[in-house]
Image 1 (cartoon, rainbow, N blue to C red):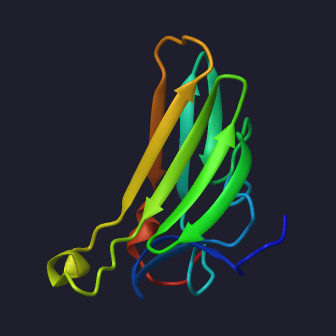
Image 2: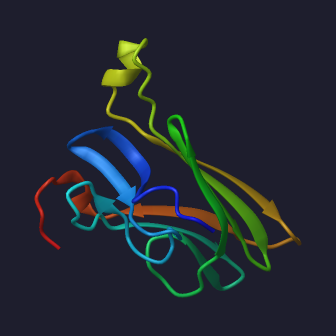
Length: 138
């Protein structure tokens, strides 16, 4: 697959809140701030004593099937023996709606399609406190 971008935008609201994936598969490394320092974000599915990582570093990762950026959305798809997962990172930057533009919010949307019934499954998203800082410490 030919790489389309130097980095993929995940959550981009302004220069102080700008988080990117600098690798082709977003579950092989933690995202970064636009200046290059790590922003520890973890996304995973916990089911049947398995932890399947779709964002950040970790063992037991999903297999990423595609990534694409269009407009204000970066969409990634993943597969495993348990489920198929599609994740969208949405950064609403509509220049014609100043209320939405000025709101310091980005969204993570997901769609999970289970391949078989499972018990006690959860989709988790964790953000370390350094996501709030624009300083370059690792």
